[in-house]
Length: 210
Image (cartoon, rainbow, N blue to C red; front, side, top):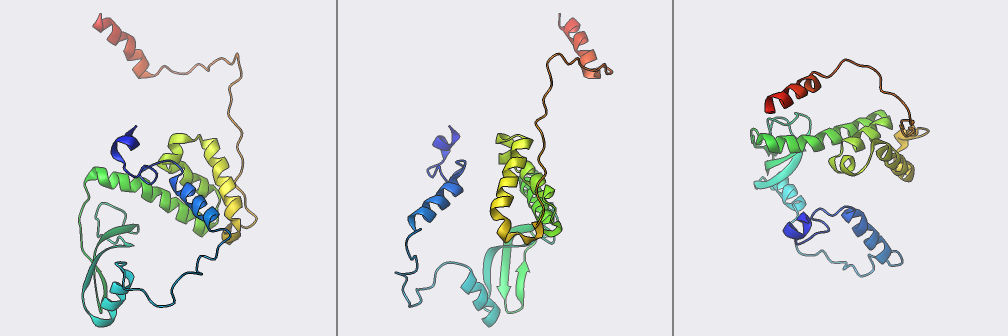
């Protein structure tokens, strides 16, 4: 398997359900414990997290450089203007300043777009309160589409909405409509339709090959 060949951390290297399994492990481990009980009251030494450095740069003018997630706005020129993109950012007392990266290699931009399209539909669902857009977003997710049928994706999205409804007031009173399984009864004869040109050409190719 590719995971065994390339990943020394197989769970977070691509294993299906890895994040869910980790969250369940942590939730079960600390279910009966006060996780803050042993936390020190003194401030620890400064970590490598960006937050304090960004604040310092904005307050003192001491320039700080980071890779940050911001509204794209032309930073990566072959990704949508309004998507969130990560790129080189300089911070000083006047704010955050993007560096224009230009085009990503087309294959990298295409890979990003598969995620951006899912995110756009999820945002559309959140703003409009239309639960069908939740289904659309899940259906366009590459992993979901690789392992589930459209009906299964719809059922999954419905279960997720019901579980998290408390935090999603824009969907109050709304549900994802169920859809039946499409089945073809035995004995059904196909309708007469014009022949596909490709199928018409195929026999001729066979003749030429002979």
